Image (cartoon, rainbow, N blue to C red; front, top):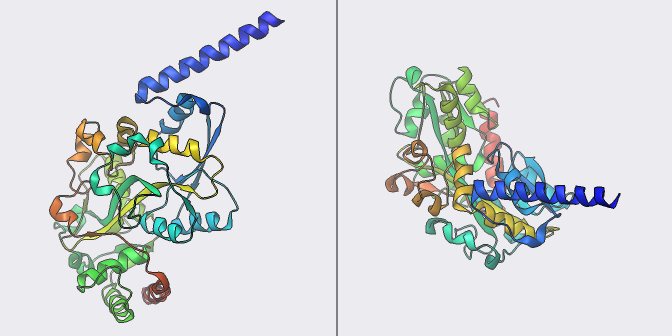
Length: 361
């Protein structure tokens, strides 16, 4: 009996060693040894990680990942505020990071445990929503701009005004601050203004220029575009590039208009009540590995903040050379982050509600 037990133990060790070797070979990343048998609880957006990212991490560290998804920052914030579930890793967008720092909902990251932070492009270190770089690590980034059917539109779109003036069905994204930010920018105002009069002007501008809007889409504008319900869809960059890839055709294009667009950055962060923050830091270090980061960006078709992955040629060339994913310096100069606006958020809420009502949404 003892020989049988010993044989089983040896077999388990061999299988574990084989899995570890496979994961290390595929990623080139080595996990610290003291975490075997532990559990990491992850809360991320849906379809937002490469298919082998989690299995490779589990194999490399000998851990289990409890992986859950959310569909909006607001939904995630509600759960974290209520404490109804505990997670070790969450993936909030820029402005949500700022809110969570203000509310004491995030734990500072011990960067000594995350040496791969050195792989991050300097542009993405100490961002405006986390100016001291204490609470977040960049995960993926992209823009919200214009996807369109080139054949049906019949001209190259270069300006937001073309979208507003288009004589055909258009979908806007149900993104209050991003959409109002574009209106504010076109009016010459700060996209993060807290001035009630400027916000009112942006509201009126969108109401006056929304005559072609048939839907304010809840992150499925790319489906409406692909299905032919609309000719133009204001959407997340990656969503449009995914239908371009699926189509394997030249019907669709994605463009950042000359006036600018919303730049968003999703981040890895550790909730203040995380059960296993040390393993969370190991996971952040893993994701910031050049190969692991490249695999994620190549899968999602979003921008990588990992300069090492870019320098080492690990990002697919067709993605890296696409100005809709990696905009030129000139285009980047016109991009804007959404920032926390404090009590003015209620003014934006009211304005957006009035816009939706005027559009029949």
